[in-house]
Structure formats: C-alpha cells, structure tokens
Amino acid sequence: MTPRSRTNQLLYQAELLLAVPPGDDEHREARRMAGEEGALALLELALESLLREVTEHAALEHHDWRELLDPAGTPLAELERLRSLAARPDSWLARLLGRLEALHSSEGAARRASGAAQGLIAVGSAAALHEELRDCLAEAKREIAALRETSEEW
Image 1 (spheres, rainbow, N blue to C red):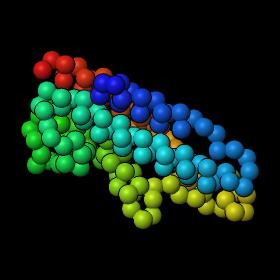
Image 2 (tube, helix red, strand yellow):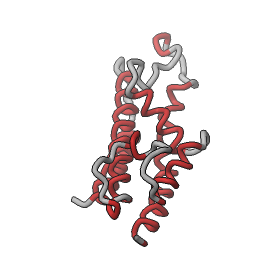
Image 3 (cartoon, rainbow, N blue to C red):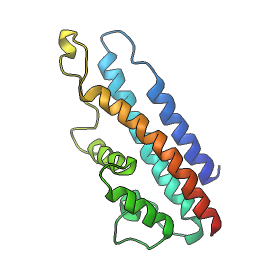
Image 4 (tube, rainbow, N blue to C red):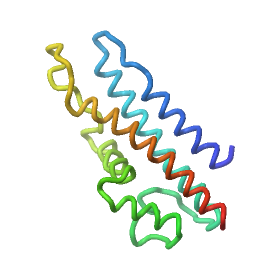
C-alpha cells in the first residue's frame, strides 16, 4: 500500500468510527468515548502517514508528528505549511494536536457527559469532541489535497 492509500484508509476508518451510533443501553457513554478515542488514534496514525507521504521526496528517517511539526525541525515547504497551521489556535491541526496530547495523557481525550448517570441530555463537552473531530477531519481532507499538490511538484 502506498503512503497516500494508507492516509486515505486511516481517514476513512476514522470517519466510520465517528459515524457509529453509541447505542441506547447502559454502555452508551463508554461506547461513545471508545469511538471518539479510537477515531482520534486513527487520526494520529493518519497524520503520521500524511507526513510520510508529503515528505517522501526528502527521504527523512523519522515521521513522528512531534518531531516533524516542531518549529526547529527540518525546513521543508510542506512541513512549514503544517507548522504554521499548528501555530494557529483556531486551525484544525492545532485543535487535533491538542486532542492528541490529551489522548496520550492519563486523563484521556473523551469525557463523560455531565448528568449521564441521571439520564439527562448531554449538551457539554461530550458531544463537542465528536463534532470537533468531524470538523477537523473535514478541514484536514481539504488541506491534504493542497499538500499533496505541493508535494507532487517536487
């Protein structure tokens, strides 16, 4: 499988996980949280695959997103473009990176809905992660097309 195909596959799988309904039983919250964190983990793999894909011409040894998106990292046009996105707090990449940091923390990224135990409707951050991931995914797909175009020019 090519890096491009793998990136596409991981993005598609993340979309599929986000589309799975959490159900209507006592495991609803746990299932929703698992789906969100699973989709987030797939998005992390997709980010690394994308970095591998758009830096193929540079023959880099490592493709860890922390290393490649570090402002002091290798100066490549595609990486500079992503670094500038990561530096903008309102960008999809900055939001995604923040969620990835949370995913790797002991707290995790997904949160229980407040009032879930009492059967209240969740309107807080629980739904927000799901929607935020969908938004990040949609914006990432638009950005990826432009990055691929730049990378192919090399």
